Length: 593
Image (cartoon, rainbow, N blue to C red):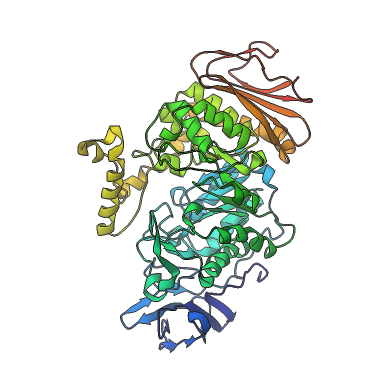
């Protein structure tokens, strides 16, 4: 058994030997707590300092248990490692060393190798379903898969952000060892595996923490999802720090993506976390920590986080490609090409300026950071699924402009990310779906439809009623990908073009990416920009992009070897005119004069 692959946890069930397990629960709001193991009489737990309860019980892996925290309330373990009967059922003791790792020597890949593929495990058929897709994903040129959150959710249909048991991999997708087999198989294909974790809130169904650990939450601060988690509490900090190490050590994930960290008020905990993680993982192992952060806090990227999802890049590109100007896209409609130029030159578009949407300052200076500190994408789960009808960009933008945009995204020195199905240009929607109780489901449905009342297309109640009900099973099934679409000739051709772009990235960009720095970007037309980067080996990469419908002059055209051009150049030389819906990527041995 691979006992090496463990991280000792402060909370939850820890197998002491084959016949005994130690149980620990932080329940500062309780006077007494009892352990209830199925088939045994309740056992009182000893109260320890700081609101902890503990006992060692004669049971082993497979035992099903709850904590009795009140005469009328028995709850699952908040640090449960397996919930086969969903969020309200008993927890199950798991032996963390039972899985036999096939690639125990895997140490990851350096960050400059990263090409990320975000996916939803449930839509691909659970952990085993993802394993079946790995050869295809690896052959595409992807080097890392990123799994949307896996913490146990109510029911089996959910994006994962309503999780309530952060240590329990979603049981509807398989056993925890099936998840380990997925990570193991990915490593066998040379793929890193990242996990999206949610430390800013718990879902509304199945979260019992407030009933026995009220200090877990703040009474004086709220988030869009309810009371803020109180990271001032040492036990709370430890709970989530242990969780990060649990996924990285026991499940061998290569990195974590921290969801919406702007909703975590205690920034000092966020700043301390990377160092704590890296001192407790094996030397020489590549561990990559990624943030999503509406605040554009560049300081976190200096504190040890590897990169941030660059929503500014997406939003500027989306406005240029679609012309949409409502919601958060209003931040970019005044001058989207200038925003894109700043993204390519400095990382963030907003670095302290006032947001036109919120009328508040947003962001901090980021121009000193390497280009690979930013993850660039045209689509992800949020940007598709948070649309009322879940349309993908292939439905919204012209194909010639979209092809040009992919040349930029997949060949620039920021780290590229694709969303499942994007690689073949899928037109299937990705909708917001849940499997809540009927009462909660109606609340979610009505609340979601109300959110879109401010959008012109959904101003009338009649149009809002066309927004799919997240709780309806058919909303989930409408989001499934289909082999028939993927195998259609036009989609096979689209996938081939993405494969070819990634092959170019592997050959020309990855070997030079470490240490790459932006040299600036210039707007050359209403929807056109030229950007340059000094690569790690001293060469200069230049990308000229025109998403407009008319050609534009390039007085300072890229020089050197042309790595890629769309549409194809008519001559072997570099033109000083950039056609409509075009991209040109060049690599020069010396800086442009």
